[in-house]
Image (cartoon, rainbow, N blue to C red; front, side, top):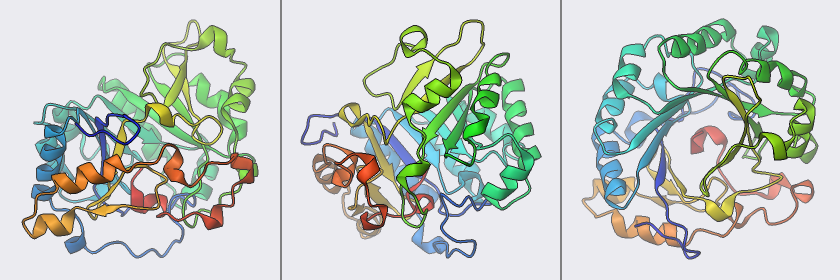
Length: 326
């Protein structure tokens, strides 16, 4: 088992396949001209498979593939097929652009969910956020997932003054479709120009939607990152991930493996441990994994212990979101 100093058992591994992406969302990728990691520095399919199996041996029962954008990697289908053979729940987070290209492979992997990142339902605003004119393809690919019966969630990073006027429109998607829309509070990462006044909190999101948490909250588990709400008569549901206003660290069971083989025990941690270099030297990664997980801080990587309104983002030490993995 992978247990930290606070007794939290870690059973959920997020594996980033690449730091590359075919979008340029400003809150994830700091600059348009971005230097991606050379292929030789990335974990190769056999290395990903080997490490994933070691994590399964240590008690991991859920794996999520992330990026960058995982489906821009040319051997993503090979990696997916290998991980689909493991005794785990397999999921994926994607920007949705290449779902149509990889639909047979996606279907064969039997993903428990495909989380599609989509921060606006307006074509012009999509271009503003992503710097790419691909809204129709993403939206159509969400419909494709639903048509195929593949469980689908939409991840929406909510920012005041940008897309907070669209919350009701997003909730309307859940009325006649079995889809979960997940509103995510804006979080600080290297280069994304985060400020506290851009954060729309969990309470503010519910208020905007007219949702009473006492009436509409769905049952959850101790490890949930999202609080889910069901509106009577709606096929789907909405959820809120409140990392800034109401952190859920006490039940955290998640760890992250970056595309270049670094293990992060928290999304906001300022430390990481290199697994890839020792692996390529023939060393056993398990002692490194156990030691790093044990040192996990109690809350938000130990860097954000104060109220988020008092946070000075420029003093945080971390990677950009694209280099961590969504």
